[in-house]
Structures are given as structure tokens and as C-alpha cells.
Length: 226
Image (cartoon, helix red, strand yellow):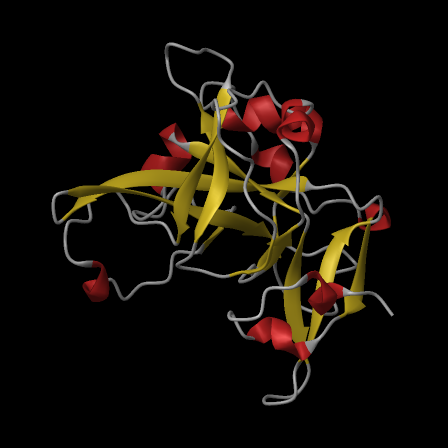
């Protein structure tokens, strides 16, 4: 599962160094967040459109995918859709349209998992050893609700590597930089190989402040390493 993540400050130049990015004029890059939770709006990379082949844009979307066929009020949506299993997303009615046509990348600096007894669970931050930002595989969709378009996304999950296995039975699909374009392009062919767990040797985990469980807390000290 991936139910919380964090993202340090990243410049437009850093983002553009990894993707062919359309940078909006006069707009600052997204602010850092240390407590991104489902039902919040987060920046997501998607293809820029047919008039800009091969390029992508970074745009805010709601984290919890709303399929295009959903037209009821959001309060009536009772199914969970902030994560989707990579192995079955192409067949599930909620995700299959997005899997076929609307893939995205979610930029993060790391994510959280909790372990331990109920009521006394310890959160851990999980990131790359080189401390670089990276991207999670996602799907996005657009729904029309109450006369307004809502863009939303989900994060794909897969079996855990050795770093995450002791904390949870699932981990987000991490896409290597050289595969960003391939994942974003739905015409690129089979992508099942991208769902393999990211190499454990390139990742690490450390205990963090339990306050990360409170969405009102959003400070880099939450993930300070001892």
C-alpha cells in the first residue's frame, strides 16, 4: 500500500532534467509536502497533449481516482481508489480505462509505512539512498461531477522488496528514470516488467516521528533521521 508520501522542494530545472517537461510561465514549482494523504491535491506528470508529442506537463490532481463513468456526488463514492494493484488494474472496471489510455507519474521524495501493534504503530520513511526525488507509477482519469471536471489519480502497487517487506505486504511501483517516457505513452507496448519491485539495495527505511500520522503536521523535521 501507499497511503502517505513526502516530497522535498524540487526546482523546475530538476524536473526538466528528468523529463521533457512543459514548464508553465510565471508559475513556481510545487511546494514541498511532508504529509501528502489521499483526497489531497498533488502534482502529477501526464502527457502534455497531441499538440506536444513526447512532452509532459505537471498538473495538480486529486489523490483517489474517480473513474470517468462516475457521475454521482463524491460523498456517495464508497470504494477505495487511492491505490491500485499493478497486477489487476488493467482488468478492474475502476482502473482499466485509465490503464489503457491515461498513465501518469507521481513525483515523490519518499513514502511512509506503519508497523507494530494497533494503537502503537511506528511509522517509517522509505526513500532512495541517493536522496533524489523519484516517480511512482500512477493512473489518472477525468470525471464530470456536478458540472465540473475533476482530474484524479491512483498509485500502482506491487510486491515489496526486502526493505519494505518487513513493514508491509505491498509497495508502490517505482519507475526508473529511463522508463518515464515508456510508462507515460500508452502505445509503448507491454509494461509488466516495470512492476517488478525496485532494487532493495538502492533504498533505505528509517523510523520517523509518529506525528506524520496527523495530516495537519507538515514539516521536514517529521522525517529527520536519527
